[in-house]
Picture 1 (tube, rainbow, N blue to C red):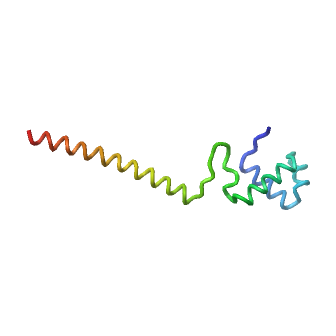
Picture 2 (cartoon, rainbow, N blue to C red):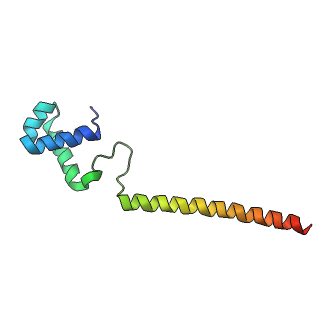
Picture 3 (cartoon, helix red, strand yellow):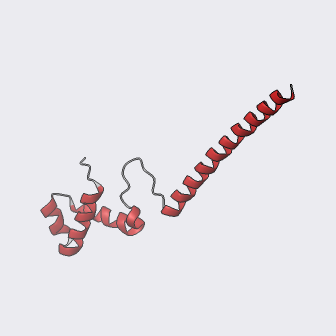
Length: 95
């Protein structure tokens, strides 16, 4: 099984819409069924159609939310460490 990168798939789709999937498949050496599959993926997922093997299709808003949630967890962890340090130094001042 051949693996095609995202740019190749996008260019192949452009060509298939310009000259037709059969002619494009002959010109590119790609089976016509593959072009039809790529067309379906492109219609269904739009710009997120070809994310690559092992990657999830995540829309930009969801990705931003996940990034912000990660940042919140990191800041809460740092805050907990600072609270513990403050308690430690406050205890040592009482002695």
